[in-house]
Image (cartoon, rainbow, N blue to C red; front, side, top):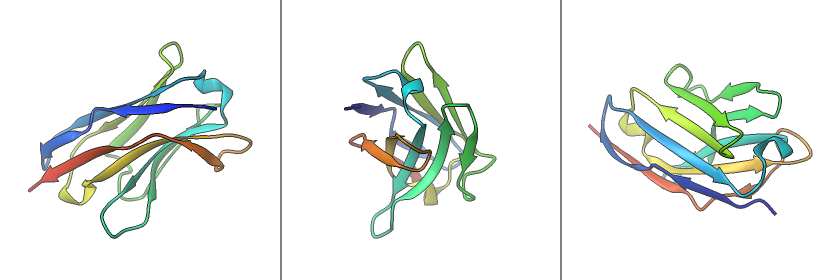
Length: 118
């Protein structure tokens, strides 16, 4: 069982930056991939960014070039660096861990709210 705890959410004006952190209870290199997802009210959860155990990253089209996923194995933490934030980035952001494949996300954090005002 992997427990994930997100932190770093908050409110920011458009154009600003935020950094989210996801602390894992287990070695992050023991899972196939770590990902950040988000869900806005009335919308489906969507992938924001992911990083595989080998270091391959992937981003959603709406955040590519603005967001960066990074990790620190010693701290068992995955980060989401968010720049040039837009009001449409407002959502609850979730950290997740995938096992037995890079898209088998079975462990989820509780989520952290990000609000971007215009």
